[in-house]
Length: 178
Image (cartoon, rainbow, N blue to C red):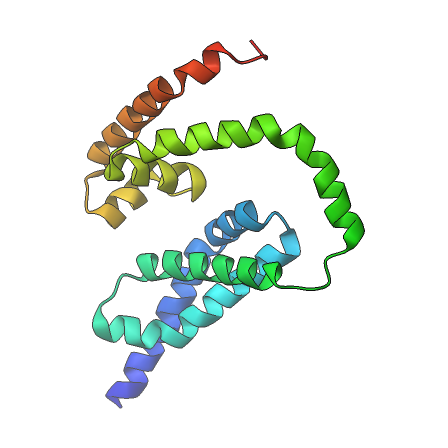
């Protein structure tokens, strides 16, 4: 009887988590893969895995939010790994991408500069920026994930942005758009 009750709680909790996080998970995945149908498929995959593991999460009192974020990233990584080994890539697409590379050279350098600037931040600062900007978490959610108060998280976020801005100031000064 207790097992049925626990199973019912797992089902209810899965439904709650799905309703609360489905759009956020979809947006994060979509930003990573850039294709609506693929993002919908991966979002569905994430929540199917959650449904399969919710009972274990409840029994072990694990953080559903952290598990969800980790599963989302694992699904994206698996999708990219599977995509890289697909032999169906058209030669014309490769030729087109090679032709476009000349336009991307300044962006590659910019990406390296931004990557170096991010890596130069303290780990906590980098984590707050990435969770906010890339993954779309609110300050409250980030604070919950990192065991910080929302005000402390907000303060860390803004100091991270200032630090990153000062590390990238040389790029803004030399921008051709200015």
